[in-house]
Length: 313
Image: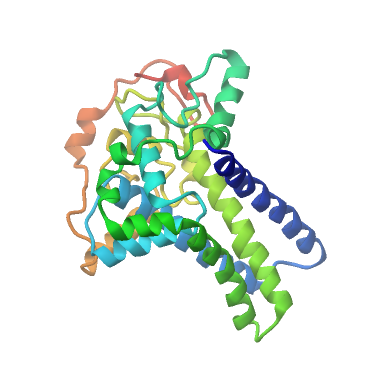
């Protein structure tokens, strides 16, 4: 990884965190305005769905098909989440599924030398943030994302990631200015909350799938990795926290496989299918799910219990 890439990742981690502190200082003197909160929610959903539905389920796993312009729109929305260019993100994630929780996985919390509590903490740090300074963006795009590399428009979106990311930060300020009737203070406040703080929230929820959802949670399928389902992360992650389900059936468009497993990203794909914007949607039948069920063992993993205590490989 080049020094420029490390510095860019460091900035992406530190600046939103500083913005959260600034936002807290602003909140100390006044409550969060409805305008701040409304634009934050909209930008969170747009950029979050850009990652979960676009980068992940559509472009990485091809869980459904859609029009080319929608593919590109999702790629742009995902770029505004500031998690890296679309081709690099897809290559990293496909490599993660090629070597899940094994040597070669870009962000597994289980590939390290330390044991005990130190090992768990070291693994969580690497999976959550540390990998951004070592293995992030290093997967071969020609090997793991050849389909995207062969698409000229997708290559252009990937190259223009810095510009798209900047636009994603400026949109909240512009909305704050316009919707407040021309107030620069409102523009600044919305920029902090719906721009920088929103990036902080999307980042850490996404990284929690890499870290928490490979260490703590529940498991029910026979898979070789240590992925878990974490119910309390389901809504913030827009359904991605049913991560064990996803590793059992990577191409499924729906990560929530039971009625009570809330999956907003799956709901969006379902709605797109209803209006003809998505087709060839991959689903998993109850029969297939039963075939993958693992035999319960004594001391099975529960919420908040390290998955390594009950992991099949």
